Image (cartoon, helix red, strand yellow):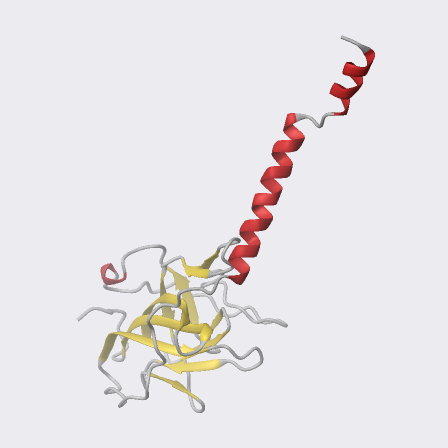
Length: 203
């Protein structure tokens, strides 16, 4: 091989470098496409106010959608009133993708089990909130998966047990983080709440 040919060959980028460059460009393209593509939101709509159920009855299973899009205000929910509330007692609070229990309440992760398979909630294992600049509840933790390409959150579909500050019990499953009315941070969940003080959450 002549000296000129050898020099030209040495100046060619290695195949591995070319492959890595192509992979990087494909990743950048995928991220850009994901960031500008408008997602197809689930067909949930904000739940309208409804009559409060009897205080000692089993409520649900019921599905509820609320607006948790504020970055500064917690949106509170009361199982006993079957509604998002602005005053009085509450059992859960939502802010963006965060979820906490009321003070003296707690949450336990029951895992990725079918919602209807949970007939009775455990007596122990409920975790209180971890207070801080961004209060969280370790019983729920990161209840979602994040897609790097679409930048969307999807539920892990775990079922959670909730013990309220008043010693009542509910099971909870977070279904979605989006809806057509609000878009992002519109949380839909389903639950069954036992108002008689027992831990049974099936009829």
